[in-house]
Length: 482
Image (cartoon, rainbow, N blue to C red):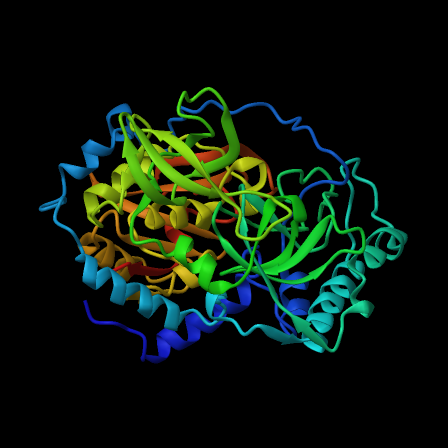
């Protein structure tokens, strides 16, 4: 379909979207942007070690007009002509990922970074983040004010930006196990509002095993590293990073020609061929391992490990019965829907908290398992591919309906302020999506809500009984990832 990128309606809505999407926790911080991003974040979670106190939510939720048969991916696949035909060939996928690289300004190819960095840039980043957070009114897990002294006494001495030299010699590493990227070097969790326990203001995102990082600074207690990852910059735990001697060595593993892709929600990885001792690395959907060989009913892969020496990797073992693929699955509408439905019921997790996914984390992992290297943030995802339309909230009803009648299920993203959904089809004049969402608002006069907290299938009338309006009402853009 024809792109609408150059018309005036597109320009007005895209600017509006950029201003109002600051809730997304996955925008990497840079000098000059850090203050804006942090002051704009709109939701949060805890202070000290946290045990979830909210009740569990049933995984087989039936919401809106959804029926039991619609919880089966094949229900949607059989409604799509030629659903198994790849949207792109392998060669076309390479070119498509190059296009995504060029589209997303905040994306960083860590393995192409220079070996030195100006110290003043990193000092500026760190100080911007610190002062932006310090200026905010935040709460701890007991719903009490976080005092300014917390930042002055517990954060600033650890960040220690004054000791950064004028010229930084970059070090290189790879993630050992899924690990959080944090705004400041602490496990302490803070809330923007009392009782808002699902959202941690210090949480940026979660990065997977084998993610390459450039190490720019370390905390004064050496427990944290300040790193640049492909889509985020922030603090990660030192124990979760293996050091490498340089980008060339790291590249041989990260860009291995033979690789194994995690295609299930999460799979076990073992340190022995007997599969008796599991490595605690959390290989979630989209995690990629360099593949060495097959051995009977096992895949032999490489994983990075913490060592006093650089370039430390070991063999690890994955059962062939695990939900994995040697190379990427074909990028087809059918496979996209199957992959998305494997995560139905999976826990919501703001920025990857609690091992879960937020709305853009869900779509990111699904696309990644098929080889589409989607950006991590919802705003960036909404600009990838063919732009089918941009809209004002609560307006353009017929225009949105016309587009969705034609849109290709499984590869179409519907975006609104603060949320993102994967379109899966139309039944009886209702449009359906699979998406990861935290709650459904149910009041016209208050913020009363039903907690969902997982990946669900719904039609677009969800939230329609609230002052916010339905999902359909609030769609601001639709794009096909093709």
